[in-house]
Image (cartoon, rainbow, N blue to C red):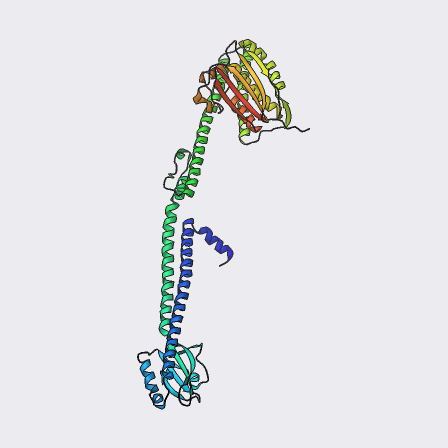
Length: 470
């Protein structure tokens, strides 16, 4: 099989199948290693037994020869040897004198012809005769006769039963390895299937996922630790998706609601203007009224486009030094007429410079200042305070007024969120100012927060301080 073909096969295998194969492979390797160790130990044991049997027979024969010290003892030697070998059909013995004449033989057919003639030795060799396997040893002894005589002794041992036993052990080992490997694969498949069941549920949920079924979650109580992390991450993703879809639905509904009012006003004004003939001045008044609604819609659309760019990180940002105190004073001059009309005082303190886009930062500060003016009762003071601490610049806009309900603070910077829906009818904006301010703060690497205490509401814009380039 080519390399590309094997890669395709691996890709087709499921994770459960791969784990099952891994279990089977590990079990087979371990059993084979254990079987090889066991086989080697059995081989050594049988070799020691065979060596012991050969040594014992040579020792017995040596003792019989040592007691052959007369002619009469020499005549009875063959019978004594046969008696000592009785019942040992797996032993072959050959005694040869110094001239090579065979003086005793037992199961001589077990020897090879060359061994019988003395042309080859049996020492340290193994051979086969008639389907049986033999090993042998060879020793020389002296007969203690009046005239000492040298005797060569050859002993052969049939080890066929040992070979047969080892073959059966090896066959059983291979069968056992195959059986255990199959069993390990089955158990591994079951364990992997059970352990990866949450993954299957992830797949099922993901396959049927739709905007109408975002509330489904994966149960993680019985999942393994590794899969539990994945399930929890997947559930977290579903939570975020559900929240995003909910916000998108609310956002769409809010857009439709906000656009419906100016469009309805435009239609009403136009229908009234067309209901009968009017003077040029009356038509001019109608167009001026329509222009206000168009401007309101244009501001709303511009704000929504701004937030859409902020969501995608496409806000243009120039890195220029911005003097926050100068920007605050310029805005205070701009809002001075409105503040006097409402009977509200304006104050600024502190000074700091940050690096960023001057127009965007002015817009953020303007949103906070206009918001504070709208919610400050006559006789109150809106204070802008600029502080530097730990390399950060904090710009706070503080005003007295009705405290913000604690439950609404987390949603305060969401789009189209208003504390009092009744303010919509008074033309106080679409509820996008604080959302835009948060986007500007985040685009500059900062953040915005709000706190209510002792009858004061404080919005704090935190920005990184300008780096010293000198």
